[in-house]
Amino acid sequence: MGTKAAEKDWPPASGEMAEKVRTFDWSLTPLGPISTWPAELKSAASLVLDNGFPAALAWGPDLVTIYNDAFQPILGNKPEALGRSFSDIWSEAWHQLGNIIDLAFAGKSTFIENFPIVILRSDHPELAYFTFSYCPVRGPDGAVRGIMDTVVETTSQVHARLALRESEERLRLIIENARDYAIFTMDPEGRVNEWREGAEVIFGFSREEIIGRSVDILFTPEDRAHGVPERERAVARETGSADDVRWHIRKGGSRVFIEGVVTVLRDDDGRLAGYLKIGRDATDRHTTEERQKLLLAELQHRVRNVMAMVRSVARRTANSAKNVKDYAGTLDGRISAMARNQVMLTRNIGAGVDLQLLVETELEAQAASGDKFTVTGPPVLLSSKSAEVLSLAVHELATNAAKYGALANSEGTIDIRWEVEAAGNGSDCLHFCWTELGLHLKDRPHRDGFGTELITRRVPYELRGEGKMELRETGLAAVIRFPLEPQDSVLGSKSKGGTAS
Amino acid sequence: MTSIATLAGKNVLIVEDDFYLADDEKSVLERAGAHVIGPFRDADQAIDRCTQERVDCAILDINLGSGPDFTLARTMQQQGIPFVFVTGYGSAAVPADLRAVERLEKPVRDQQLIALVESVCL
Image (tube, rainbow over the protein chains, first blue to last red):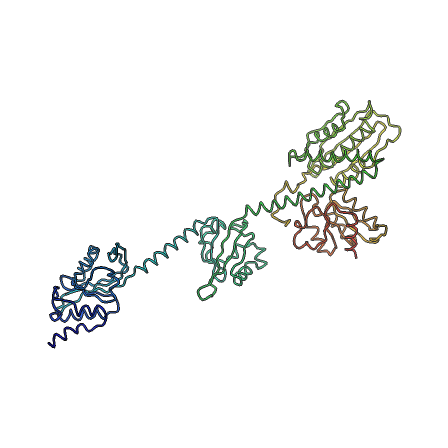
């Protein structure tokens, strides 16, 4: 009876499984009643039941199974495994586990991490991961009698790690495919410590060339001299981020306009870990905007200058007008001449104005018939400034001729000719002569001072040349001479890179 | 209104590439009593004269034919010559370090010009 009581009290471990082992009818298994168990089986069973780790014992050639409370979740809703064969319990995975069990029976202990097994412990097969050790349990003679399985399920850790790896992979793909964006990080001192393909494309530096170097090399010398890189990081430290919208330097020295932002990176304790910079190459858009600004400013400049000029011409016309009708007619003629010149200038922008066309246009405007004048000279293209002055000068000469000179007299003719002379300093000089013939001038006819002032004062001032007017008995003679220099206009020249803003 | 020669004894230098505007400015300032130096079409000529004569106020056009240029303005700043801008450009065309310079936008009214030059010469 004493032995019976002792049998009922074994195993002494606490817990649900220990209780089950105590009450289980072991006589129905190959192990037989507990009273018949060898000492090594009892020791091993106690070790399993007292173990804090999930553990199971598979004993004898039939692999009769004893497991502890911690092992229960691994079994899930499988049929009660106690006393059954380990190979039966894990039949779905036996093609994998059988060999390992055999090894343990051969005396070889195994330790395997994150072993993937498809198991059935719920209403569907599931892939689970285990880190486990099968170790042999020997009898007094040294022969292996069973194996002890100590196991930790690592399914959730493996899933978490896979998820993290996937997320890192996604992030890597995003960064590496964001070729239009320079994405890189710096350490707290501003040295580059991560550099991706987009940054390489935009700045020209390879990863090997820039890792470890100060980010300051991407800033322009002007910005470096003004402490812009340090200030940017200081603002990021204070406020979390700082805008970085400015010209930068590429490898080799060319400039790239970056629209970006630098963000401070802090570790979990709030300590400065470095900076992240994300920037986009906005050079094209920025250059277009700058050019638009330049064009707008230029348009404003030109329109206001024209208004000022018209006002000045109107004022000067008024000074010498005989009456309102004369004033209106003369002013109309001058403004029309300026407008005709604008038409010629804009007809073929940048190509210059053909001198012959300019002269003939002004004479036609006075309705001069072809037999009243001759035009002789080589082809000459005038810059906009020269054309502006000369067209108004020819207008004044033609108007004057129509009112008082060769065009108003049946015998009068006009000889218009020009030559291009070498000016000595390598540039050419236009020598333009307007000579009226066939008149017999007794008295000085009326001439207002506008045309004279234009030829004798405006030509020297604006065209750096000279102008003379002479009233001979046979008619008026005017000589205009000025250097033909291609005068660059802002619209025709290259953008100056935003100096006007 | 400007019968009083408020600018009597003042040397005013004009730099303007347009003859009519330069000539207009000159006569307006002379009517106000100023002695006009120039007008000059180019910056170089103007700088030469600055070294020879006292200039109480210079009137500078920003664009002398080849786009906005502030070289002359900066030279005058360095030499301590007071100056103003008369220009067709809006303030956006002026660099930040010269934004404080008085500026008249074309077309300029005679009274505005005299008043501005007076304020500089005071």
